[in-house]
Amino acid sequence: MNLPVVLILSNNKSKKGILKKLFNNRKRKIEKDISIKIMPSTTMGKDKDGDDDVEGNIKLAVKPKTKIPPLYRVLMMNDDYTPMEFVIEVLEKFFQKNREEATQIMLHVHQRGVGVCGIYAYDLAETKAMQVMNYARKYEHPLQVQLEKE
Image (tube, rainbow, N blue to C red; front, top):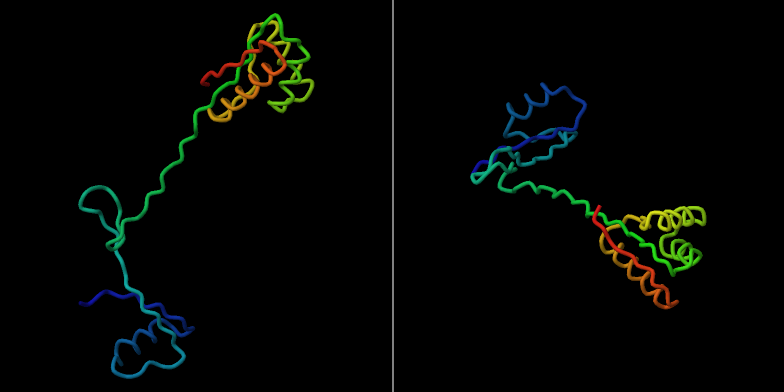
């Protein structure tokens, strides 16, 4: 079986001179200063079953696109019993808010009844909500946290 080949020539001589020597003097030895690498050539084509490009007999791998996971808001609900200072402490401890941001969120929750503590992927949002709820129960506060898909 004759496979088509690609010759890669590494020499400073002109291409014409090299090609003449290679194809006119097939039986003679090629000069020592010419380096030849023979590589089988492949052609691009269509696969029988679809639109996949193939190279030789090998299908080209299609890299799947990574989907961005849906995000969830962690919402804190207002109640009449949880002290404002405790809410600020929770925001600083579990949501890495500085004192000023925590105070703004706490006032928003106090005035409007609900406020966004942070936006996270589902697993992280659920973990933070559970941590906050457990912490509030530990200190006997009725603080409520919910998740809402963004």
